[in-house]
Length: 400
Image (cartoon, rainbow, N blue to C red; front, side, top):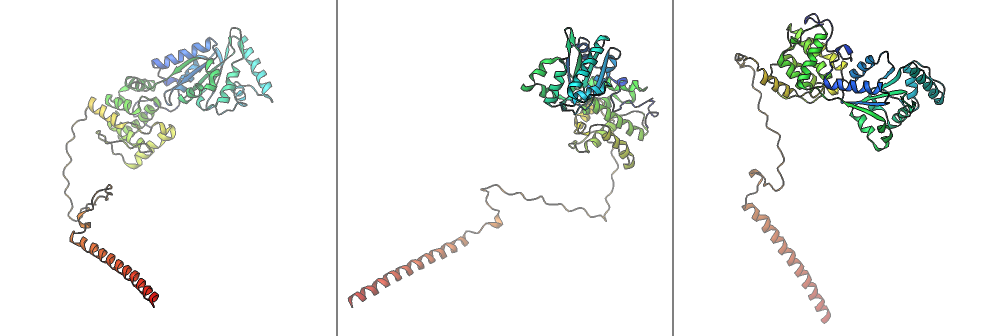
C-alpha cells in the first residue's frame, strides 16, 4: 500500500524472521559465532536465551543457512512434545519414518547419525520456544546426546527460548541437563543507536532511504519500543501507513505519537499527555491501518509503550515549531452551561466531631438528665414504700 509512495520494493518491517533483513548487531554476531563454533566442534548442547521479540528466531534461521552443506538440520518450532513423542518429531523433521516402538526409533536414529557422520557431516536439532518443554521432555532430549563417538557427539542440540527456560534448567532436578550445556548465549534489547541502525538497514534492504523517518521520529521509536526489534517493526509499519494516508513523504513525531497512542488503547496502560501534536485521521482510515498490526504481532509485548518518554526525548532533541493559537470561538448563548457537580462526600475518620448542624445545643442536654434523675427517685420511693409497707403488715399480724 505505502511501498510505491516511499520508493520501497517490499515491506521493510515485516513480521517474519526473513534472513535478508536480519540486522547483525555485535551481540547477534557473538551468538551466531558461539552456536556455529559449538556445532562445528561437535560439543553437543548449546543454549540461546532472551526475552521475546529480540531476534532469537532470526539468529536460528541465519544459523541454518550458515550450516547448509555441512549439516543435516531440523528446526522444531513450538515444541509441545512429550517424552515419548519427542524422538518421533525429530525423525519426522529429518524426513525419516518413525517405527512402531521407542526402541526401534532409537535404533533408526542411531543408524542415521552414523551415516551422517561417515558422510563428513553432523546432525543438528534446533528447539525453538523451548521454554515450553517440561523437565521430562528435556531429560529425553538429554539422553539423545549420548549418541557419540570417541571424538565428538553425533547429534548437536540447540535449545532456544525465553528466560523461563533458563530458570527451568537451573532447577536442582535439571543438574544433568545443565552440565551438558557447552555454550550459553543471551540476547538483550537494542540501544537507541542500534535501533536507528536497525531501521536504516531494513529500509535500505527494501530499496528505500533512511530519511523516510526523521531523526526525532527515530529517537521517539527507540524510546517507545524499549529496544525490542519486534516492537520497532510494528510501530514503523503503522507510522508508514499513517504518513501515507496523509500524503506525507516523511514520518515524523506526530505519526509515531499517533501509533503509540492507538496501540496503547488496545488493553495496555493508558499513556499520559503527549506534547507532540497528534494527527487526527478520519475513523475509516485509521481503523484498517491499525487493525492488522495486532493480528500480525504479539499484542501483550507491545502494549504499555512508554509514550511519555518518547515524547519528552523527541521534544528535547527536536522541538516542534511554534503553532499559532487557535482563534477564540464564541460560546452560543442558547446552550446552557453544565452545572458543577459536587464531589462525592468522603467519610470522616474516627474521632472527628460532627458538623455544626448535627450538634445538640447545650441547654437541651439538661432535660434528659433531669428526666432520668426523676425516674430514678420514683423507682427508689416505690421500692421503699413496698418494702416497709409489707413489713408493717406482717408485724401487726404477728401481734394480733
